[in-house]
Length: 127
Image (cartoon, rainbow, N blue to C red):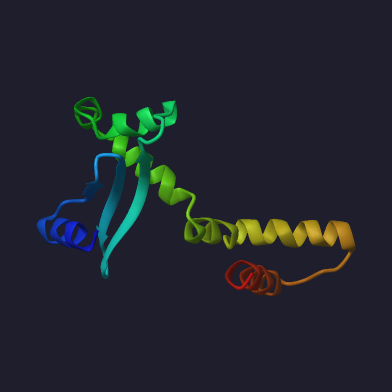
């Protein structure tokens, strides 16, 4: 994986596919501060091929590659649900404010948003 993603990163390629023909792994390569390879999906063809495996493999087929944006859309869906992305969404000011209002409504206790955010961060970062 290191060799494929390093080569891709230094060549301006954003995708790497690694396979031994029974297992297929597709990685998205990003090069913001460091080279980072994130698994987009993995398909294991043995012992059976499932329908969702076929749908994933379709993304890297000729059909999928000719449909611009299909693989990128899948990457966006995967990256949107990462721990980091969800943590950012939960720590958004709107969400923290809503949590504060619900706590006030349910318990009668009033807290500043900063207190709520600190407790939520602690819960998310150090479970």
